[in-house]
Image (spheres, rainbow, N blue to C red):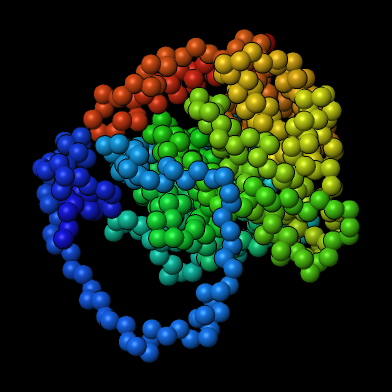
Length: 511
């Protein structure tokens, strides 16, 4: 018997109609009509035959195969949706999705800077600038879809194929350099799952300022967060696919970079699931290449997968740091949680063939990220082989995250090592600017999280002046918004924090 109301059954969330009576808690809080759902038809279970009850030798061998062990010391307690009280996890996420307004989902060309603080947005007529490899431009066939391709969306609306291709190109031209998770030489849009295509096109839609792209962004976003969250819940015993993890990291990153309070509330709600998923998949144990031996072209494919795993790990770590800086949440991940190396150099990641990749030097054994963070604290600059835009961004994020933990600790903490780390990082950043020959513009004219120089200046300000005293009561107390208990309290905190951040960076620019 179906014991849910129509609204909860449609949203596939838990309903307390059977215990509480009409209306259920969710319908009462949303002030909507509560109607009991009809009876579900169950399929008839067949009794297994005697012959099938005796397992075959192949089945016995499969049962005796050792299963991959789960990573120990991982807390999955928040997978129990009953721990969320009156409204469970998925119903909160569904309610947030219903309040999303895409009218402000646009990326500012002047503000979309690279991770080293440089403006890298190409002109409207040059979509492929910044995507050069050792062998010229990447072939645009990677981003083409079949003429009869139909993207799965929640409603009857569809998006034409040529528009999906345009949005994907905007993503790779404008956004991908900020978080280079996808391996462009081997990437194929047509063979990607729908959730990854939706995420890519949704982010790309923010680079067009017209009513069509706004409508398309809303269609693409839809229930995408809850779909990706369900893949991490593993209620059916399965794990999210690697491409689902990539899509979730990109969506989380974009929401923190350019989303409003609603999108960031969804991001904060999903983030613990994402961290638990990468722990379960063992990504915290990824080490990377780290050898002085000559590369072998036959290992290119396996190297791509290992490097992709590592970049997903660092993408999750970046989102974790950004949430702590901009939303005031305590970091879940620490640099000591992994021994992974830095992301590889850009030349290796963009090599178009196995032979081109094998001709490049392997990643140096001194590329351990944790060792570099410890070195910064002692005033030692990271090795020059690790000075990539992505790596520099991760280092300054780590220092900011450690500074937040030190300043919110109940015990007195000496922050002199963090001061040394910030100054050493800045010296390395200047060296990186000189090497990349892009020192024409060193201004941090944006509060976007892709700007390492802005993060450095925020860290210096917080170190000198302490963190801002915000109206924490509004952030902690229950919201008066009957539709969603998350929006108002987070919006108050985020609005005050972003206003404070903009003021700090504007003061640096004026000085």
